[in-house]
Image (cartoon, rainbow over all chains, first blue to last red; front, side):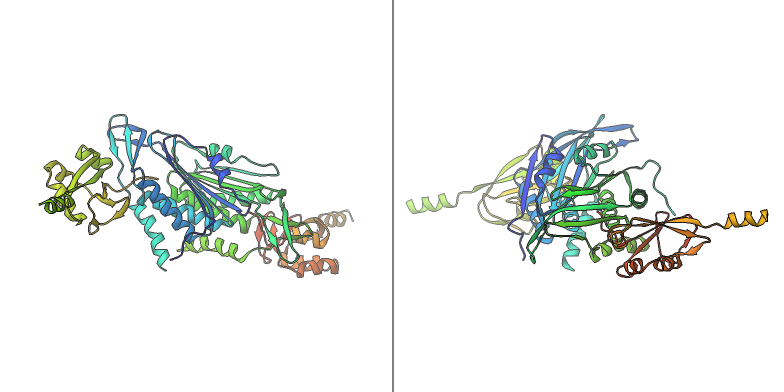
Length: 164
Length: 164
Length: 96
Length: 96
């Protein structure tokens, strides 16, 4: 089984504090990298009709230790399958208001196709294989977010491609 | 033929000056967007063996007027095919040294899959359908960069998917 | 006699830590339990043992889909748990 | 006579602008040429006309793959060019 290249570098942080996309972008850059793909996930507005309510915040809980291990394993899989040099994954936990940044995934590579594929693979697996849970706080009530079938399908497609 | 949604917004600029990824990211954000994908293309180090030489800079020439039209058409195609809210395309021209930023494509959408697809589609078409040319300046000589077959294949795959 | 005492000491149950997260943590009203475990057992048996502790826990485990990790690795219920392992039970993840 | 003079004025050739970019611009040693054009013609004919202007241009056009745009839209050589259109000739693009 192939392993991630020795010169591949991962930055992985789980934190409550906000992050600076620009700083993380600068930290990803390498002279031999012509392509950087960044994904930023944010708490978006959400409305519900009955009863009329809107999202105030997401509360994110995680499993300390396993979260970092799972992200490291996913990043290593991405670096093994695609020709990438640096990967950054930052995931915030705790209470995050609407508009807040939740997650950043950044990948730098020589050419763009590798960075796009690696970044999307990491996001798809992050949704499925990392022990993080969201609770949606509306004004009148709070509820745990259900896992989505579309997210399972998104992760499954990388497994299928791998076996081809 | 479907058209881009009325509330979709495009920022398109061709300029010599550098850009701030952070500023462009902030300008893309909308309260109903939970996902932002950014692609940054940079002048990467390049070495040649015979004679031993390294890249100093890329010189980018374009066709003023047509460049903006072509990018607008590509962005509109992306906004028609994928559910996205804001798109930014900034392409630098002129002489750009190794390490310099060349191009930024940013897309904001409610969910991540649309932002990833739209951003990658725009980059693939940018490589094939926008009148911009690169000349590679090495220390001892300069040469126009040849179009790559892999870039043609990357753009072609969107056309195939479209007809399915 | 002293030999017997020693072998009894070796066979003393070790505490296996069970962690609960998110909706499951709320359902069992606890983020952590210690379960005395004498010998290796399959996770499915450990879950049966856990459910036998209270109807409250039994209901929490059957009311929803439960994912399982042993020593911070996702595993299925055929996996073996050694005494002292860290077991975690949680609903499908929704990060990212 | 005045009628004849008028119809001659109407038929006077209009300048069609031909733009060259990148390697092709360097090969023809010019970024822009004006070609007098009387009537609509297909781009392939206009390129033949252009090549007939000098062996230098003829060589530049045949030495490489040439992409064509009329009024800033990529077209193939079957496209029609109206007198006064903006025609652009250039090598395969390498932006992004």
